[in-house]
Amino acid sequence: MEERTRAYLRGRFGDYYRRTDLSPPPDANEREWGYIPWTESPGTTMVRHKSLLDLGDLESFLERERPRHVYFSAGRYDAPGASSMGEKNWRSSDLVFDLDADHLPSVTLGEDSYAEMLAKCKDALCRLLDFLENDFGFDDLTVVFSGGRGYHVHVRDEGIQRLESDARREIVDYVRGIGLEFDALIEEEAVGGEAGRKSPAQKRTLSAEGGWSRRALDHIESFVDDLLAMDEDDAVDRLQEFDGIGEGKATAALNAARQNREQIRAGNIDVHSAFVQVAKVLIGDVVEADNAPIDEPVTTDTNRLIRMPGTIHGGSGLAVRRIDRGDIEAFDPLVDAVPETFRGHDISVEVTDGGTVELGGDSFTLAEGVRTVPEHVGVFLMARGRAEKGKE
Image 1 (cartoon, rainbow, N blue to C red):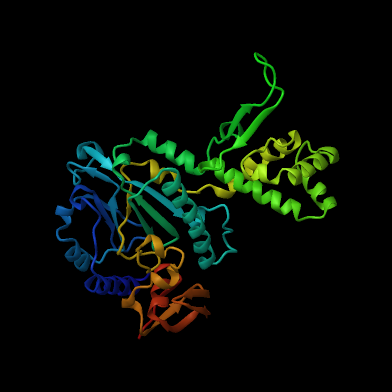
Image 2 (cartoon, rainbow, N blue to C red):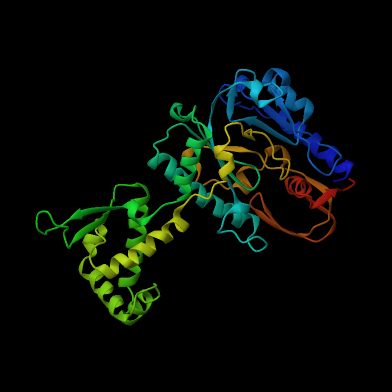
């Protein structure tokens, strides 16, 4: 990035901070703060181990320093400005989750557009919130667009504040579905048989109440609905795609599904041995379909620094936005996170990496060379290293 580009972005970031009211996180003076300035070196230099007292008034600091990135810690400390983690004396930490579109298995890098990647990341966010709200019952959640490639969720319920990394790892494993096994989800009940003997019939059910059992049952129900909508020959062929299911077992499983649709809906998957065999495979598939692909080290790290909502992401020029729970579905990061400071006028940039840009509700196809573009598009291109500031 050329000096002219750095100076322009730094100046416009300062204009943004002068016009923006920021809300720091709870217990801001107990947290470590860090930031990345605009430097000439090709890499980034993190300035950290700062307390809010070290920075001074937060808004004045941002207006004065106009940093490229701004962070605060999930952790709270007795001495947040100490130069080593041991000297800080950790007290508690928020539970933080990070979803990054670049790391989602559903995203194809080089094929999916930025907008498509962010849309897939929002789907993953909704799955994560389902776990946090419905499986764990967390109430104090803050949802944030990261300003870059995804979303953050800050959980501040009192019950999680003092969890060590190992306990946080268990939460990670749950939302990722790591180690989830068929037998752990199944409830078995003996049906009939003589006293003192193992019943020849074991009623195996999935709970319809919630958790991974409910997700597995939903997955099985959807499969059964699709199966019963097929011609019989196609349905038998579909079932034979499962390992160990030949034509005879496929026909038996199909008939069992037809005759016991309501039992399956209620969670009883033990309608036929062949159907149980199919259900085992489907339960394995549900982890891939329904897990929340979070960045695991972020959640287990009690000292993690995370972006401050309201600041600007220096790699995109977009704002790090808090999102009200009821607004998530309608939230469009490429419209709603464009700072008003950068709207309303055009600037000159020299495009070095041309292509399509979707931003602010419009789509722009830009060839390399000097171009006049809306400022929010120019800031986006410069921040992402796709353009340099042109001469006005």
